[in-house]
Amino acid sequence: MLFAAPLIAGHLVRRWNRFLCEVTLDSGETVRAHCPNPGAMLGLKDPGLRVWVEPNDDPKRKLRYGWRLVEFADGHWAGIDTAVPNRVVGEALRARAIPELAMYSNTRPEVNYGTKSRVDFLLSEPGLPNAYVEVKNVHLLRNGSLAEFPDCVTARGARHLHELSLMVAAGHRAVMLYLVQRTDCTALAMAADLDPAYAKAFGDARAAGVEMLCYDTAIGLDGVTLRKALPVQAP
Image 1: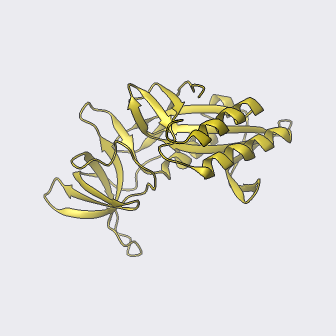
Image 2 (image 1 turned 120 degrees about the vertical axis):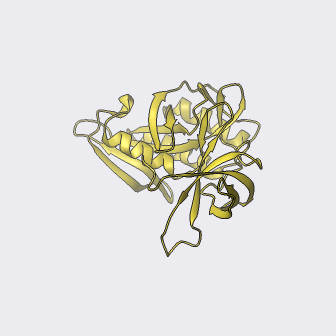
Image 3 (image 1 turned 90 degrees about the horizontal axis):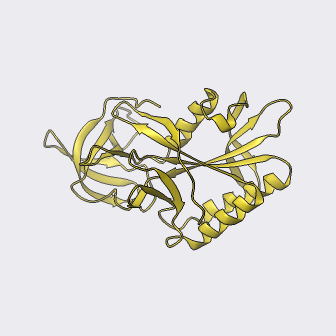
């Protein structure tokens, strides 16, 4: 997934709310930018962080910039746009770049299923059971190189796990794919202290046959792409 325009560097002044932040660009100009992330963003919203924003000239948008990346002092990166994982995974699925799902040639996004939900991707192939694939964005890091999910309570996420379990019971494949938008992680665990209900739902879904996959990403100023599989630890 490539960014639409060259990114511009600056430093975070503050995150005003879930969808708005203020950045001082390297040029000295202070601008307001869209923050495409409604989560807690623990460790990613501290004032002074080196950040990169994407400019746009779309007259329909209220803000001329969108926050895309955090660049850490040790050279690692984090992507903060929660819309990116679906784009990255969609590209990878169509290119058959995810070995566990490479046998499927037909990829349909945003298909209704379960109870008032839409699965991120429905995969199909003659002779194979359909595969229901949900994608979750991960960028929480608190201990060493261990990525964690979620970074705040997500009742919606727990519901998705339950509905994927129902798809398994109906004879389909069901996959929860966690995409780590950081370059400094080596494994994934559930943040049970932040959302114990989600951690329990994760364990129940895994026991029911939902496949838990995790991939990290290559992140740079040009874009974000799928990289390699990471192990998923039990809660």
